[in-house]
Amino acid sequence: MDVTQDMNAQKKWMQLPRDVVVGHGVIDDVKNVCADLKLADNALIVTGKSTRKIAGDIVHDSLTDSGQRVEMIVSEAASMKEVDRVRKQALESGVEYLLGVGSGKSIDVAKLAATEIEVPFISVPTAASHDGIVSSRASIRDGNKTASIQANAPMAVIADTDIIAEAPYRLLASGCGDIISNCTAVLDWQLATRLQNVPFSEYAAALSSMTAQILIDSADTIKPELESSVRMVVKALVSSGVAMSIAGSSRPASGSEHMFSHALDKVAPVPALHGEQCGVGTILMMYLHGGDWKSIRDALQVINAPVSAEELGIEDKYILEALVLSHTIRPERYTILGTGLTPDAAEIVARKTKVIS
Ligand SMILES: NC(=O)C1=CN([C@@H]2O[C@H](COP(=O)(O)OP(=O)(O)OC[C@H]3O[C@@H](n4cnc5c(N)ncnc54)[C@H](OP(=O)(O)O)[C@@H]3O)[C@@H](O)[C@H]2O)C=CC1
Ligand SMILES: O=C(CO)COP(=O)(O)O
Ligand SMILES: [Zn+2]
Image (cartoon, rainbow, N blue to C red; front, top):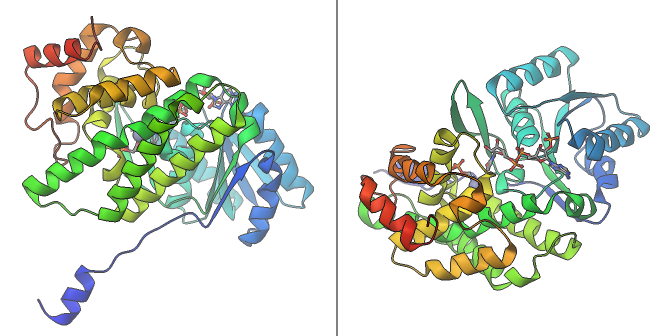
């Protein structure tokens, strides 16, 4: 390897949000963040059916009052069709930037559309349900497959703790499950590095594990309708997102437990929330790693997040089907699942961890 090749091999490009604004009433700061980022006119807001009334209209009116031209699109699904619809409207209107105002679906649609037309994107979550609110990935359904697609990270994240505290508590508990899942994601990453020499970042892994541990240690402070709980979860989601940006992949926050959740999305007639499934997946995968799965279960229980099939609202047979399918979800990502669980092994894991009874 010559010197130029060596320097290129070492090149690293991390994309992080420039402004992260978290606190009570910060939705009123959207216009100030736009001013800071020199985004002066012509915005397109992507929002959801319920979240439009909760935050979409507020952002629309605030930007309009500050003299901007603003359009709004209500999107009901995180699908390629919706991304195309948003992209088309954005191009026709010549928008300067996009905002995703709402839950994971609206944020992902706006994030990918903005990436495709190369305009800035601002994330305004109304719930702290997973780390997609800050990450450079978008989960988008195309036909009957959902792909996790690399996208540009948001230029800014504006998380109003007042609005998020009013969201159904289930969404916040789901965000906690997504953070706690970093525990097994990092173990899987370390394993893959030992067995397959995959690129590993000590900094990303340390940040990701530490974030999960802080949340586990503070599980008893996570309560409904408390802005202090929301602040803690949002900060942890931001840290997880930053860990993924440092790694340049979702490895620090997505391992075998996420593969289990993605498998459940495929097989369960009515899947639970992403973070809820990842939390239960973390119990199962920590058992497979030979780690302290009981403390993961305890923390989730204290938070009031689901720890069993019954609490997920998913029949036992789909849990077992998903467990057997999990290793096929992302074959290039080596995890503790290796070449997969046999049906009888899956049943033993699920019973021993009390995920099924
Ligand atoms: N990009 C990434 O890295 C990641 C992306 N994802 C993706 O994100 C999506 C899941 O996101 P998630 O947020 O869990 O769930 P959803 O996007 O499905 O939202 C759940 C529901 O909560 C509603 N809601 C949100 N905020 C509030 C509020 N403040 N008050 C009342 N209702 C509210 C939403 O309303 P409304 O109908 O208005 O939206 C929606 O009906 C999936 O598509 C998943 O694949 C998951 C993990 C990571
Ligand atoms: O959900 C994520 C991290 O929490 C993103 O991971 P995926 O790459 O599995 O979509
Ligand atoms: Zn996740």
